[in-house]
Image 1 (tube, each protein chain N blue to C red):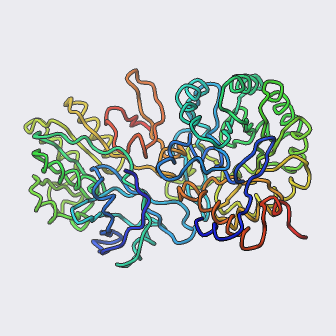
Image 2: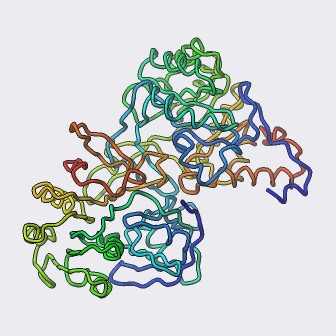
Image 3: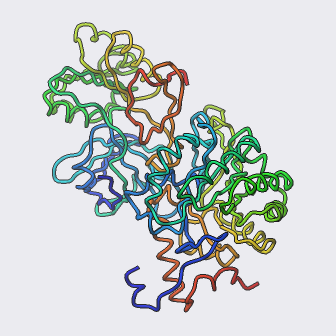
Length: 262
Length: 311
């Protein structure tokens, strides 16, 4: 059930330059949340900044905790980073269509940079459902790989990549993943990250006939499907292009349905 | 709202183009989808009217993304009237909307005069529609839309064409992107408009300096939100003095205070748009705030407030 509520800040930790982990008390949303869904966060006490900010759910545990992990990109997220424990933040959610969650399969999760945010939550739920999870995680350098301890504790098979080689494989995370696809015979792949990484992921999934899902990011207004502001270009079965709301039709889409040339 | 029961009851009902609205606050077309998107948050039966997203004769795909860019206190959009078209509206959206009591106002836009005529005719033979809002003010489509809204004679022709093809009250929604909005307002009034709605969005743009490209794929878009409120308020004040038909005021209304300003300026009703995108409960808060203001200020009837500005 969709909620519009005031969530109390339990803690806000700075994990790196401009990257914050925000723990909120929001039991109604935390209990309903599915991996891949997002919350729409009011980031102002006034009308400036005006719009809410859509943030992927990073984790949702028992005890009503909802965890967000975000990078400060503008005035909205900068406001969010200033909020202190005890303060209340207005959030709408859980919103959007999340990832497919199979049981007892072998899954590949491919995260580029902050694309790790929703995939950690997916990994947790996927493991609980008896799946084996290979978690590929790439970033610019070692300092920008976040939540490694949490991921290790979850018992995913963790594969790291960095652009500068300061941790794991040197190069794009999709290049690292590509090496494992043949031998690991995955049942399904999932990705979130910058658009070029997602396009590469979609191409590889196609080549290996692997069912694959991607989580897309788009600037958003209502978050409820009303304004048609946040569309992505998709292709139907006949190859015709059309626009679909990222907020309600996604943010998770079949990788093969996305029109990547956009 | 419960507290208001302790005070003398205030009449909030207004009449617009022959429609009785239980209160003068409605959603602005294009920001409320087809109503169902907001049903989880508010009771649609408490709206002054239901105003749906603009319908075109054929499905309209809309403009390529990105379609949104935030500005200081504002929102630029270039959605481009994306809608499923008349047939799907009638088949899939209207039955849902019919279950609600507030008058249903359907916004229409055509690329040609003939399309306005056909939309008016088809919607008029359908049960459950209270009025048509003629959109001649969308800045984001290449054909029709704003082209019809910037020349008084063209605006009058669209209005007359729609009037010829419907028995329903006709509301004409105007663009502020003109030299003299009162000239357009008088033209559509003379052509038979039963009410005038204003303002649609103001044209604008934003630039991504890293990519050195427009922030919107469509290059330009329509600006809404609190940034445009003073512009909208002045346009409403001028038009309300220039015409005899009721005016529905809109443009950056975020709070009850804003709505009251528009009523004082001469609007008989107001529409809330961008505020709903930020706060799904905005319209309900505005209705409650208006009722409280009237009670506190000793008004018994909201109509006493309309045009009560002292200059």
